[in-house]
Image 1 (cartoon, rainbow, N blue to C red):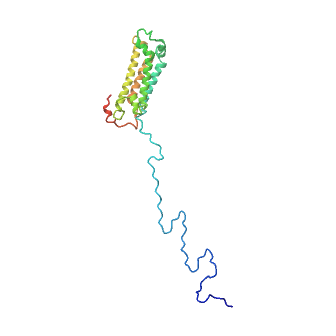
Image 2 (image 1 turned 90 degrees about the vertical axis):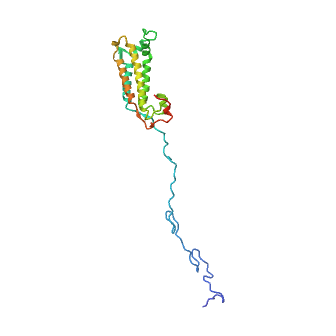
Image 3 (image 1 turned 30 degrees about the vertical axis):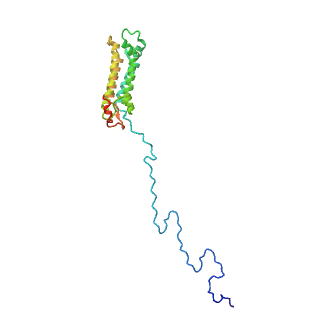
Length: 246
């Protein structure tokens, strides 16, 4: 049995009359070179690995709490201990301890008046309000100083000295300044006690002596003073030294 061949004069062509199937390379042509698929986490073949991206730089302090500025000028010191004891003694003397036989300072306040003072006006003023006022000022000044209440320059101007800055250099001068304040308060207390008992000193009992003893402890505590805080500068600005002296 014979099959009809191609017409004479024409070359034989392969796969003539048969459809090409998809997915297979055409016969007579070289197959295309296949490349590995690029996957995640694998470097590309024939290329260097890509360097990691640099971390993003944030401004200083990013993500951190803001700074609160310099610290206080003073901190609570050992001087607050004798000051506290001295003030407690003086309070007891003014509020309950007898100044004369069975007579407290509160009894004297209720019995004395400015119009009936037997010719002793200063004693009446001391008993009525001056003694309490001196005690209050002593408490305010001495506790503010020894408990580190002088924290800012504003506090220095209000409680300390208006023409002098508190620094390491001027710290001893501030100790003297507050010590002399405590001495002044004790002198005023002693003057009032003297006005009360200058005619009959034997009538005085434990009350007046406690006021004097407490005042001495306050003076000692003010002399010791507070601790130097982290915000205390070494010295003041050049212009501040010319503002004034103690």
